[in-house]
Image (cartoon, rainbow, N blue to C red):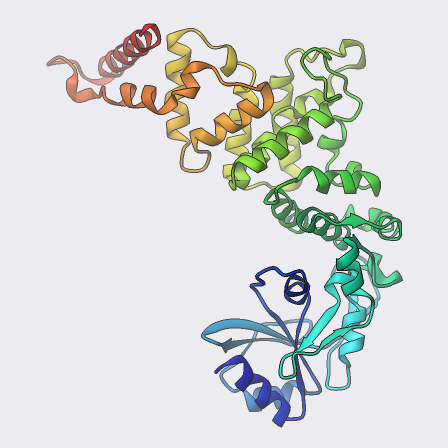
Length: 410
């Protein structure tokens, strides 16, 4: 069934099919939009099921169906309106029936640029709240006073600003401030989802800067907030405090790779500086060890993916040592460790982080692949006859360290 065929069947049953949200926004911005969010107006759930018996109901609190359109399984929701009756994203009384208008549905959304709809058959754009003008002006504004009723909209707004490169209006900042208390009780997976999408942008620092303006950074990411005001030796860090440095590193890593695991590791590399005693500033002795402790505590609340944790742990442990390594044994150990972890933190991404943090790489990391190949060319099959077990491991290690020593001299 094509999109037009689907829209025509909806019309014949007495309804209207719209595309809403980000797809409409991106199309107006001249981008190549992808995922479509469909909304049906003027039909009951029962009528829809009769007209489209192959559709699959997946919504619990309101009707959402999976429908195959143009050979793609698409979500089709019913126009709905909401009334706040409790806390958090579950604290809504939702009405979704044939009497709800598209105007009512759009009014419950977050920002003006996301609150436009396109009627599928005619191609007409419905823009009730000035979304087109705000796209032209590059600004994000809330639809109404109801913005703060779903607290995660504050994270979405910060993420939208990051993705779109738009300014955030003072009106929206005030609406975001109203989300503070309820954000404390939000499930970690909702916060993690928005963080992931923000780290996938080219300038993730904007996400944290907007949250900071809205006085939400301390509530959502206290480990990052704690870096504010933590001064550093100006000769090494003319960019300012540990927060500014971390934002700079995150942006540089994001510009160098699409790997969100690497961007998170770059974000986390200096979190130990957030617990440096004031009397020690501007120095941050042992901030690597402290950083591992902070990361563990952060993970208790955030529940990061295992790959994020392993990559961040490696970077926190090694980001100060790696640029200064000279002993062949330590270099061999690091090269083999990077090779082992390459499935989720490719060595080139580790190098992006070290370069963003220090400005340059040591020679052995600049030529990582060459040195790795030298070390891996030596395996247990080359051991003298009779060397087995623990002795085989020791022989293999010694040979690789010798090969590393020779490579470094050459």
